[in-house]
Image 1 (cartoon, helix red, strand yellow):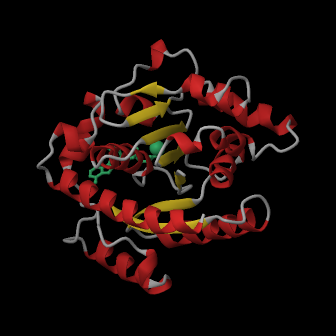
Image 2: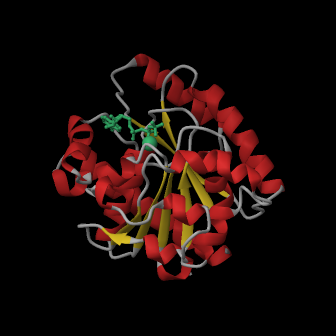
Length: 261
Ligand SMILES: Nc1ncnc2c1ncn2[C@@H]1O[C@H](COP(=O)(O)OP(=O)(O)OP(=O)(O)O)[C@@H](O)[C@H]1O
Ligand SMILES: [Mg+2]
């Protein structure tokens, strides 16, 4: 039985996609079968994992509109145990088109349920919004991971996200839970990073926060333009080490969540 994890934060540029790509690859390297789902019209997870957006037959758009079986959109990546449902700009149209659907936030859930058992872990890279597409991401998953950059205003955005999670839980997805918050792009030399980190920690139960912190690391920012996850691009870099550790934590939490599902 697989588990679906959405990577969410409506704030832009907090390392959702970076975390989705690198977690998928690192979890795959640990022997688990992974499906990465690109739920962002920017398609950064797609290109970042080395898939050419110009050569796609089907994408998340076709899946979410219910036009094909989801397995038809799955393609293998060059990385061990990792497949992807890719996305392109076309996904943006679905935001409007879905409005006409009866259960417009449940389309992704319906689709992923058909293939859930074929994977150990499905990771959904959400777009920076709390609109219909992102609500599909929240309604489809068992757990969410919230990447957070320790900057002023980070906490404000999270309050809104948590309120949305609560609403989704009360309506379309009763089993939804937070797997954890992960601090990203951390530079502990910056006092502001440290201060915000302490503020976030004091607002959440300790086990909500992953032990692994992702440092700011230039190799991580270089890797996507080579279409490679960090553990392949430079496996001994600090960034790669961090994502390997985070993968181990996620697998552990997924295993214990799996027993409850
Ligand atoms: N640990 C890190 N060290 C250095 N750069 C990083 C790190 N993590 C992410 N970045 C860079 O920060 C930028 C934003 O990251 P990313 O695209 O993953 O964020 P996002 O939350 O997915 O953005 P969006 O909201 O637009 O989807 C990218 O250029 C990425 O390469
Ligand atoms: Mg992104």
